[in-house]
Length: 395
Image (cartoon, rainbow, N blue to C red; front, side, top):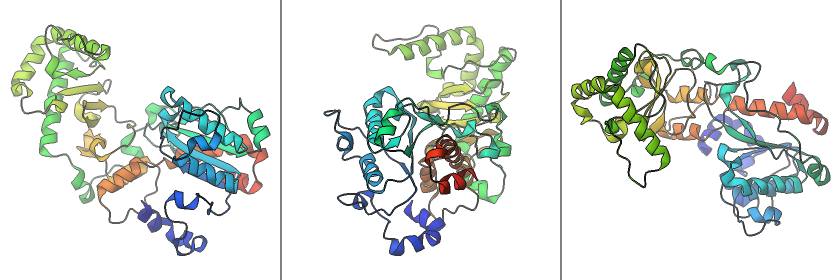
C-alpha cells in the first residue's frame, strides 16, 4: 500500500516530506513524542481493537495500545481544526458500545465537538454526479471540529452531519452496472472470465431457475436460502439446531413438497449434484424478477451462490467474493473495482498482483462517500472552521 501511495503521490508529497521522513509506523511518530507536523485536517481509519474495560474514566489512557490512542496523541499534540475518522459499521453496534463511548469521550476531552450518534453512509445512496458508486458499503464516519473542551461537552446532543438516506432524491434502483461501471470487453478482461467449472455450476442452477419459473408461472423464487441437500419431505432438525437454521430447514422442506416433481427431475438431470462441492449446492435468490441466473450479479460464497439484480453490488471485500457480472460471464476487473471505490482511471496500481490490488481496494474508503461526509460536516460547522477549510471544501 505504501508503494502505491508513493507511485501516485510521491512527487507531490516529497517537498513536504524530505527523504520520506514521515513514512513509517504511526507508533514511531506519536510515542513518546509527536513528530507529525502541524496540519488543518486529520483523516484516519483504525482497526476496532477492544479497549480495556477495567477503567471507565481514564480518558486517552484507556485506549492505550490501540491505533486510536496514537491518533488521539496526534490530535492532542497538533490540535487540527477538523478530524475525520472512518470505521466499519459494527464499531457503533452493541458489541462495541464501550469502545464507541471511549472514542467520543476522548475526542470531547481533547476539545472536539462530535456527535455521539454514528454517521453511517453508503456510496450507493449518493447520485453519480456527486461521486456515488453502485456499491452497498455502510461505514461509520466520525467527524469532529475543535471548539475547546467546554463547548465540546456542552454540545452533547449535536446531530451527525449526514443521514443514511438517499441524497437529492436519488433512487437506489437507478444504478446500472453496465452504465455506471463502464463495463467493456477486450483482451484486458480475458483473465477475469469464469472458468469452465464455474460456468457449469451456474448453468446447473440456471436450469433450476428456469424449471421453477416455468412451474410457478413466472412467480419469483423465494428469498430464503435454497439448500439442495435439504430438499426433503420432512426436515431433519436436531435438538441443538439454531432457531434460524431450523426455520430455513422447514422452509426448504415446504418448498420441496410444493415443487417435488420439478426438483426431482432437476436433480436427476444433474446426477443429484454429486459433482458440486457443498458450497455450490446452495442458492440465495435476491434477484427478484430476473429471468435467468445469467441476468444477475452473483457471488460465490462459502454459504452458497448469491444472486441479485445488476444494479449495485455488495461491499467489495476480497478476491474470493469479487462480484460476477452474469451478462458478461466474468468477474469485475481491478479497474472496475477501483471505480466502485471512486478512484479515477488514472490511479495507478503499478505492476503488483491483482490479489494485492483487490485487497487494498477492499480496505479502501469510497472517495465520493468521504467527499460527501466532509462537505456536509463543513456546512454544519462552517462558523467554527478556518476560512481556508470552508473555502477549499465548499468552493
